[in-house]
Length: 167
Image (cartoon, rainbow, N blue to C red; front, side):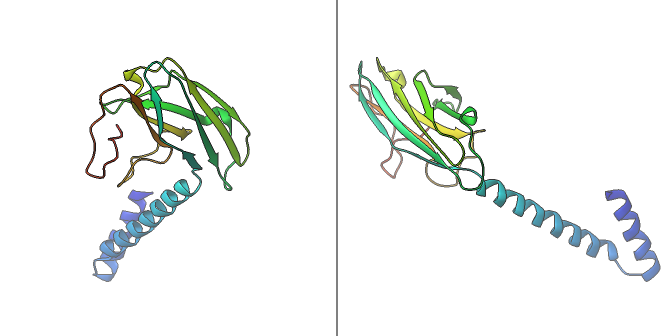
């Protein structure tokens, strides 16, 4: 496709004596850019809204955190919902806690429960749908929450006062 368009532009340039290739290139790039922007917007538009709150627990204690995924644009499936722990070196691993979910279609609700909390559990966590989303330009990613453990050293803080989310 690309080679054919270049050939057509060269033939156009030879027959008219103008630099039609620049106009063709600019037009093609505009179309590609527009397709990219529309694809990016539609990909974000279909991503569900994820609601979850920061959590606090005691060393040796337990937690129960609720989360919700909602979408009017796509049919949600429980098998596509994941909960991962984010490490300081920006790696993700599945949570060691129990995750139970209800619902499908336009809304899924879930509960994350864990006991015998340790200082290693104090971290950022991410509830996401299908794949880990790209990091946002500002603030924590949607679906993220911090688990703070009383009796453990506090994680480093950003200038906003919110603990650093390892993302």
